[in-house]
Length: 288
Image 1 (cartoon, rainbow, N blue to C red):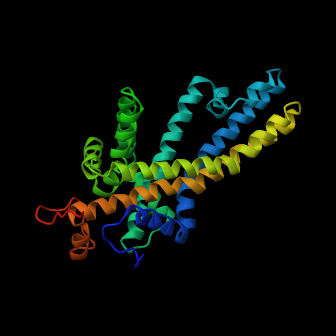
Image 2 (spheres, one colour):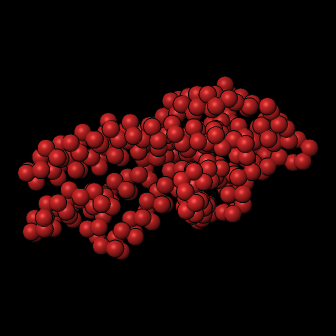
Image 3 (tube, rainbow, N blue to C red):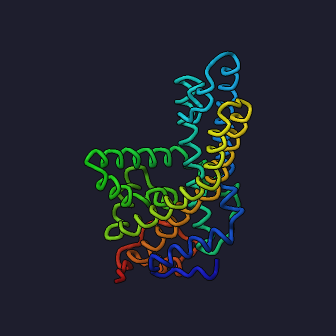
């Protein structure tokens, strides 16, 4: 993207570039998110079908209507554990693939869905560890009430870009994110806040109507099954549409922090094909 010059950005510019990148490369980002998410959709529909068979065998209809674990309790404890692992892997592929695609586009290169997801495959174990440690750190902070948990989550927002683009290990990625986001946790919070608002808006548009329809059709099992299946599809569509926003914003924010604190723009101008490692001493700079 030739017009996406590397320079310090205001928060509004970060968000504007996020939506510009997404709009101009919608099929790329939607595809990166959709392909892994198809596994979750298949898993949910399979859980619904199994619950349907049990309902026909005499189990109460409430079992089908229950959204607990998206119907995956029908597979038992082992099924739920497998489902959680699938969710985790899907999340890592979607997030990592999007970060890689943003990086290539942001630096004026081209990429494909296959290339982005393939890059994640080579670093899957590290990214699983990074996201796992991130989750544990945030949950650990939540033990000390909500505000510390939110703060830690904001400081660790850029740990996946750091791991993927700088080839860092799990702990080093978290430390790197904490260093980059120092004094800029407020921007992370606004990014999270915007994403949360979009998630609720998408859920209202794509899943809420089917939930209402299920409630109105409670005495018609076949209609309930249809609307439940449609709600799963609607949730898939909402996730594909909204999911990339947070990750694109995170990657743009990551580059903005590197430009502000490490003169990454100068590094890239001098060596556009070089490594993405942190700036060498002597080139760092700070912008007010």
